[in-house]
Image (cartoon, rainbow, N blue to C red; front, side, top):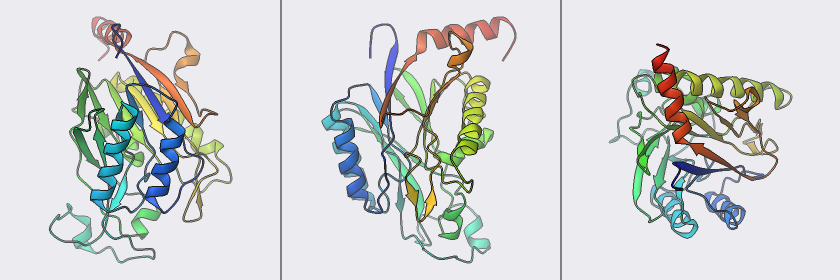
Length: 273
């Protein structure tokens, strides 16, 4: 981290998704090999259906080799049904960790030294996940990096403002996504994600960074919209509220926390909380 209070974040946008989690991590390692920063965010399901131990090992290895903290996207922790399932009353309640009744979409954050900083679940499984028997996870508490508070929300969880309510003072919200869409092209979903990211950033006075797959990637035949981008609640011009999606597979953004602190102070002074 620089002395000015800036943190450099890398958003990784791989060109294609593989059901082989190791293949995804191999490709990501090649993409980021020539890049440097403080923290990188991988897209949702980078680990596909890797066993938990194998997934954690790949994220830890990437963090150590890159010298950056890594938000490791996610993987399905448990069996995933490929056909429709009957979601009865038992599956609508909180996840019972002692019963292997389905997968949870789950991820982890490792520091540059290989230390586990946080684990997080997807609280709101969406679309094809519901048909695959993916179960709701538990909200995470977030983690600290360079004295700043960061929180990970998996994809659709960003769409629920309750996910952030009561978590005042978050300095950044990091969103691994796999934006499967039913639209004919990526434009409508990108517009929705842009507006949602800016709204969350401004309402909660925090940076919002979304890492998604490239729009040509698919998940079980479902196309991806490619919504990678960065929302800034306090840009220097009106054109800076949202940046993205990037052309490059790896894009870098500066989290200027001194500027964010000044923005929060100004809002408080005006009674705008």
